[in-house]
Length: 270
Ligand SMILES: NC(=O)C1=CN([C@@H]2O[C@H](COP(=O)(O)OP(=O)(O)OC[C@H]3O[C@@H](n4cnc5c(N)ncnc54)[C@H](O)[C@@H]3O)[C@@H](O)[C@H]2O)C=CC1
Ligand SMILES: O=C(O)[C@@H]1CCC=N1
Image (cartoon, rainbow, N blue to C red; front, side, top):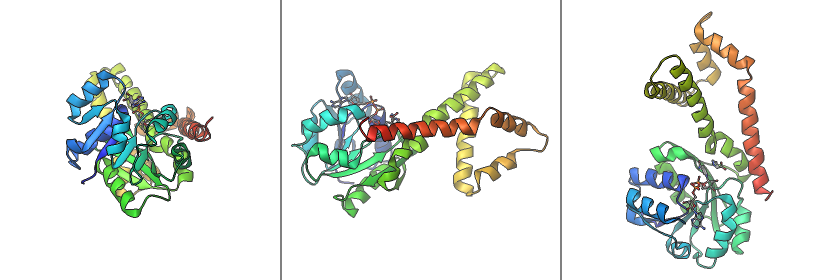
């Protein structure tokens, strides 16, 4: 790819995407630049990824073909005020924040800017990201294809309608946190039973990864795959019934609804 990619903000999510892109050899480190606030982050990112990083948002805004806003949602408005007169008309702005709408970005710029709203996730760091995107009307097919190429370099990507975007964090942006909690709880129990901690994490995380791979690659219904594990009168069904008694599905549904509600509130500026 021969685009210049800029990241305003280079924390957890910015670094995950940059590492993913570099590992995938999508483009050379010289074609990626970023900004951050603290000297500590600037020094770390420069050493770790070999990209150009400074605290000059305006310069980055002038020089990037694809400009990622990888900052916290409450900082978006201030940063856009700072850069809005610097961004050339052909630049594609990519947002990654929960609850920041395409219209909110256009309004903050006060003109018809090209915007793609996205929701990536941190497994992008290891090339296993899941990102969901929606463009506004000013983005061309070719520009969307370029941005999809970026996201697909560090995982999988899907395009959806904006009305579904507030539901995405619960499914893919935030859900890694839920899965880490699940793995941590399994590993703690394994440690309680006498397993060394490193083996407990390895066994639990490989089981989770394998189950996800089964759903993706066999195309079989998750319920059917679960049934295939449950030997009649065996150990698995004892655990499954306990999970049903303690409301596991209901807890997951409630957590996902809370994420979606919060994203909708942020979208409305609440
Ligand atoms: N962490 C995650 O799993 C995910 C985060 N996101 C979104 O990514 C965005 C960033 O989140 P994180 O990377 O987790 O946050 P973070 O706090 O790790 O990184 C934010 C970065 O912004 C920089 N920054 C702050 N003010 C700035 C300014 N005025 N100019 C330039 N840089 C500035 C900080 O130095 C830091 O490098 C958020 O909008 C969040 O909603 C989206 C999907 C997943
Ligand atoms: O917690 C958040 O708001 C961000 C969006 C999805 C993951 N982290």
